[in-house]
Length: 291
Image 1 (cartoon, rainbow, N blue to C red):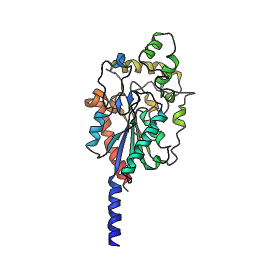
Image 2 (cartoon, helix red, strand yellow):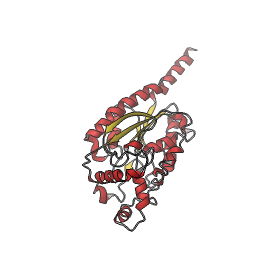
Image 3 (cartoon, rainbow, N blue to C red):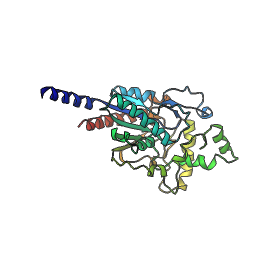
Image 4 (spheres, rainbow, N blue to C red):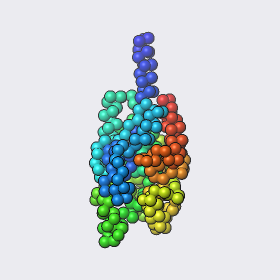
């Protein structure tokens, strides 16, 4: 009996210790890498590398297990559902090596929708303890509609969209982000039948010094009047009113890249503001999962 008690106690400790933070990137990603593919005219000759390089390092200072999915490097082409299945397979494979592991998903931008889709996939959904979304378009994206409406037009805008390869044919997730009758059908199709806690962090930035984001922010501001209950406030990519879902943790001042500590933003104030909210929150959900 003593041996059995010791064994059960050891298993409980193992179960409590094995927790993973899984980071899920947004657009302009290929697997765990940044994918500039066609976007050089917008962002310049940026060196490609890990999408969450800086965020992952920061989180690893606090949490032992931090990983990123999807794994397949698809040149930023797949839709949200295929990315979710990729992540699901990765998590299930990891669970074979760590059968007592618990997972906390953190999605940046449309990666938050991928995380929510994973909650609808069995059996992986039973392993997930929380989902946290950052700058995620839960109610759709004005820019996605703008691309869909203009990408085939013989205009300066249409030509530019085709030049940077940002059409729905090239980036198959764009229709998933579209607004139809002021609703996002992909988001509304997600059920979360196990009632796994979902948290959101929203963000905004005015006086954008990043020239491409200043342009897209202006487009969002002008296009917002076409839609009901859409604020002109945005982070340069996603309107802030679309980011709130589940338990809203905070609204921070950060542009879209800063909200994921992506590329050159690791020292930016927006990245630091994100970490001040995200790290204590992840510590809290880790503690809750151990109870």
